[in-house]
Length: 382
Image (cartoon, rainbow, N blue to C red; front, side, top):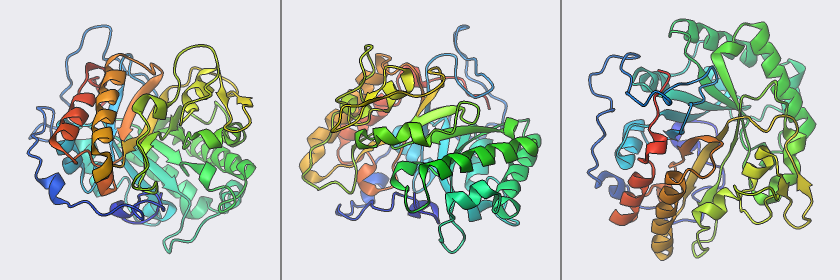
């Protein structure tokens, strides 16, 4: 993700090949927020009632049944929730090392407001400085960034949690690193950086205040990289990937990948050999077949880690409106039927205009129905 302001954090190659979609499409949708919205409810008090077997959340914020719904909420969380027709459980932002450096507060104004209105906070922490300069993974691993960034963030998260009832935040370090190898360093340096961050958070008493999310693209051509990039079960709390039906950098005329194909295979004991994003079976044990070679890779260690779809959406164009509409209809079917049971959070990415499900009234309706299934109605920890 790009560093900088929230509207600038879309992927670096996003928005270059798509014609801008009028903002009026978003504003014209008169979708009211659900009763669980931001109205005058006191922070950290009200909880939704659920059957006895559900509603429990463990120390890593894994719901006992179902899954969370989250959004990037661009340009604001309220705008994203208006399109969804419901309050989200997770608010996802993208930050750089400089975002929380020096006297800058954690988690920031927008995130604090989200937490106060019963949202869990999830942020990606990109190793870039205030001037946009890349901070190599090896510099993070060596400890050279501790005094300026790593230790500073650890102390701020520890302090924030202590004054917020020991609440936790989700944090990813350098999400989608498969595409950054070479620019930021090697896979081994990425692993070393992750492990060093974990060590510093533990040393400073902040590890119990943060839930570490290891976030890959999950794309089929990246399969051979995942084992090399994995820092280990001790470091990682959740595993995540970012499946798309179509992205803004795809040709306008390119077809939309159906929702189940985009998320990859989820059933059976055979490795995933056809999914566009093959991460699920890699994490679940059967493994994923590398595109082009067929070589199978499997996650080392535990196959019981909770999974998160940290980004999902489809970039639509006038020529693919019908396909995009069906994509959200497929999403509802998949979610309602309980497929991908290991996934405990689905977070929507809507930064680019074409990724907002506002192309037609039917598209918007299909999206709202998809993110309102009972599976995504779970009791939040705060």
